[in-house]
Amino acid sequence: MAQSQTVEVLLRPAVELYTVAVCAGAALLCLVVPWSLALSPTLGIGSALAFLTFGAIRWWDAWAILRYRRNIRRLPRYVMTSRDVPVSQQRLFVGRGFRWDQRHTHRLMQTYR
Image 1 (spheres, one colour):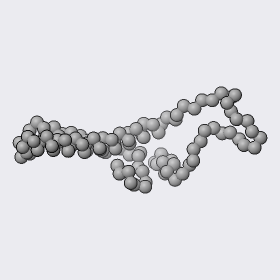
Image 2: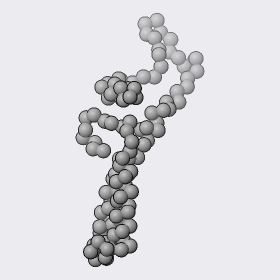
Image 3: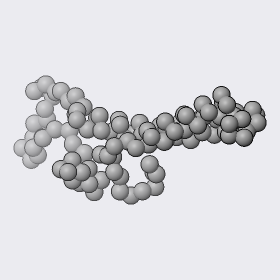
Image 4: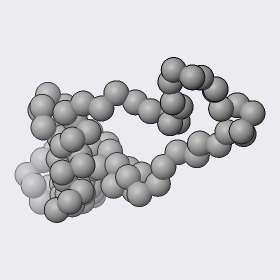
């Protein structure tokens, strides 16, 4: 999941987990039987570290997608007593809000699919 993209697609399967599994298998193969890949033991350790590093990066990307999909179903808790509600003749208090922008419209359209 590249961070430089302008359009985010977070409501999708976390296919990065496939890469994590392949990297873990390749790292295990490099550590246990480096001769099967024509590697010396030193190069096997280095290759395993490279695979584990790439797998960790892809795990972080997959975790962001899984976390977004889990948290979209629940709202943050917002409680206030009637004494805390501001009273005004000019304005109506409708609660805590946020600035709606194009990102939120895109996320809303994704939930309709």
